[in-house]
Image (tube, rainbow, N blue to C red):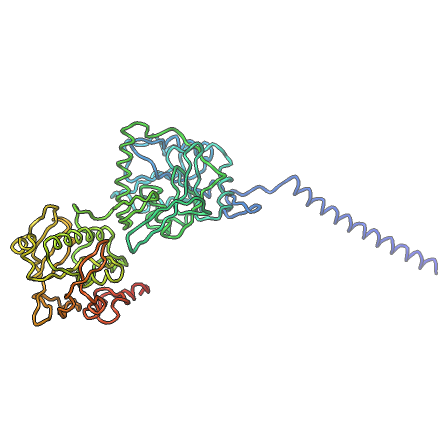
Amino acid sequence: MRIRIAKLITFVVLLLNVIAIYFIWKLLSSRTRVKTTNTFKPIEKDTSVAADTKDEGNLLLTQKDVTVVIRAFEEFENDIPETVRSILSVFKDLNVVIVCDKPLYPPLQLNTSLPYYRNVKIINLLPILSSPLKDRLPIFHIKGKYVLFIPDSTRFISKSFLSDLGDAYQRQSQDILAIPFKSEKSATCLKVKIESREWTIRFNNVEYADSCDYVSGRHALFMNNEILYKLSDPFLLPFPKAFYIQAASNNLNVKLATDVFLLSGQDLYTSHHSKWKLQQLDRERTKAMYTGLQLKKVVKETGVTEWYGCRRDTPRCFSTVLDETPQYLYEGKWTPPCCLAGLRKVARHVFHQLERSGVRYWLEGGSLLGAMRSADILPWDYDIDIGIYKDDITRCNWLQRASSKPVSDEQGYIWEKAIEGEFFRVQYSSVNRLHVDIFPFYSRNGTMTKNTWFKTHPQDREFPEHFLKPLSSIEFIGRTVSSPNNIHDFLELKFGEGVIENPEYPNPQKLSIKSQLNGN
């Protein structure tokens, strides 16, 4: 009996050992298969995977993720066919969009109907009756998540370019990456300051910056295509100048790449005629761009100022003013700087003529208020007001002659009697009607009065003559001019208490500076 029990125990132990050995073998076998699979059969990358896929922190770009856009080129001389062929020779599935303003003449030597060019599109921005809106808007033809803007005569030679580009973009962590060209003049960074309310843009050099707003020199641009939807016209010429200005207004950062490059193709615009033609087109496009973007004063990084607003031989930048509220105030802007510059010229000329003639004059109204606040014209004002003694009209030849009909002086300023009442007006020119108003006052029982009053001007009121006895002076538009004495009290009599310390638009019932600055 004891022998049987011992045999049974022995059998059970052996069975358990066999079972244990089997499971250990299964476990080891499973691990070996996993290790073998990972070692000899790596999982291939899916080229359709979105570009956000990361490998060790890098951005993995595929041909489906990027659209190449060619915008900066000229129809009279270009290298577009070779540029496109160089792209497709390296990346045959890359989407390429060529953007032009109108049908190209002569046409590009590029047969986009061939299978080789199946991913190449030429987009014409000009409205055509047979062309629906979607067909002529480049943004609808950008495929994938990213867009690469390249200039004409660009060459792609390395299959690693997309991976290098993805690495650089991921590493820089900027909105826009600028890619320089090898063997080209160095691209440089600039800072851009846009003062929309003053219609002004300023460019400044930066010796070194982690990011900038504008890149000069030959280069390409890479970005997420969502950026294009933030801009008012991302394809506006001249490109990329117009692009950078719009990007700066949206606080988008630019980084100049240092470890990824492109190559240039053939040299373009080598003849004197083609260079001249290119310069002419650039001037025309630049003027149209600044006009369209409502920027009238451009301060270059060299310190030179360029003007794109009104001149003496063109009409002023704003139309007839209604309710003392110019149109530009409703647009959230102040007087265009070109208009302020023109007003200063007219005023200096008038001051000189009155002083030379011995006419007793003084600054009036908003002009005196501007002089008191900043020694300049109020930033939203559209004319300059001067008071004179009526008895002194005969002292000034131009005022006397203007009493009967408009007259142009030796420097082209127009002196005339205003049609709105008994006062004079001096125009910048016969075309540009920026002006200085001259109001003749006379004393009546110690009070200065005049014959024409404006009910819409609360400050247009009589005042004691003692403010003019004696006349004083104040700094205004870069020179010393005559003014009433005790200017503070004079202005508070005209406008009300606290007028110097509390700026307000001429007609706050129509538009208040406080509500506008607060965004209401």
